[in-house]
Length: 208
Image 1 (cartoon, helix red, strand yellow):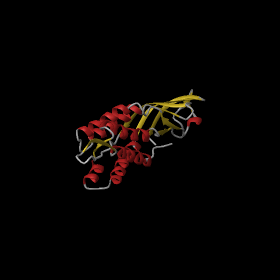
Image 2 (cartoon, rainbow, N blue to C red):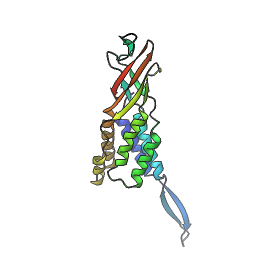
Image 3 (tube, rainbow, N blue to C red):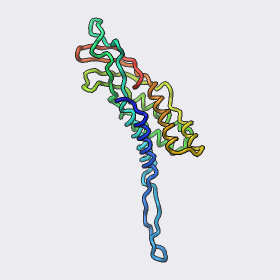
């Protein structure tokens, strides 16, 4: 697996769709005996923030890093580990920063944050909190360290599309494009290890 912009688009579309859902309630009868109905939002602001966070985290959970060729992991005393060269490691801690990300999205919604700066900051903080551990599919090659989103996902331009009367799909696609681009330039720096053969060394990789 790897980061997929289309998966993010689909997830955000689903979140927006849930955000528009309403429930119909009968509150009384009128003088002619007809039902008087009202429509209320089915989901709370917190629920909607959670749906958006779910979409971002589900997308981000497919992120990988790659050990270079030749490998930077070495078998003692100083032999490059051929077995780990080119290995792709998937993030294992993508859920760690999700609660804080949801809180940042909710803050943006509640404060009518027109530039969505709280969401931008929330995504950057989410990456720092969550992209700390990676491993291959059988957990024999691992990486632990820190990730820095060098280019924050500025969401002003996507929002401007909506303000100008653009279609919701265009807004979502623009949001996904910006977020995806920021993830792809996120840099992970840490230490890697392999169990067979036993090796260790630095890993520096952008997300894939």
